[in-house]
Image (tube, rainbow, N blue to C red; front, side, top):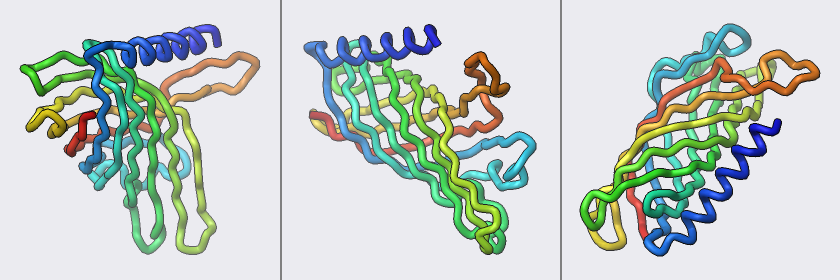
Length: 196
């Protein structure tokens, strides 16, 4: 628990320092792309189609400095679990992540960056008879790399690849242990960033 508090305090400190950087820029990004390479271990839903790619869209709001920044990222993937549309007509995955961003400039307008953070993975699976309805909130982590290629002083093209994985206490007992879970996937997106 102490390690989790320390990590949270460190992330907050980094966000404050990034916001105070005189060269920091705020940005708002809208994006679209795909999620792919998903994996579920055995258990309910393990036969769902997480291997194929599915469309995703979302947005991010952040402050990026030299070199540290912070970002809040939201994405939504309809039909994330694919599967048999006759049996599972409705399913989706939403993510809400807070990330620390480490970036470096490429010329005057462009940046390359790496990011890592944690947040919420919310999945929902409903079958046609409402017999197998699962709505679940998981704590998760992500890490990725990307580029913001400036096309003007206020507009950039953004490309980003991230890896997501759920976290949890695999053995509920008197000890709180956080371990990587059995659910993971990749996300590749492209979009436009408005800088201000």
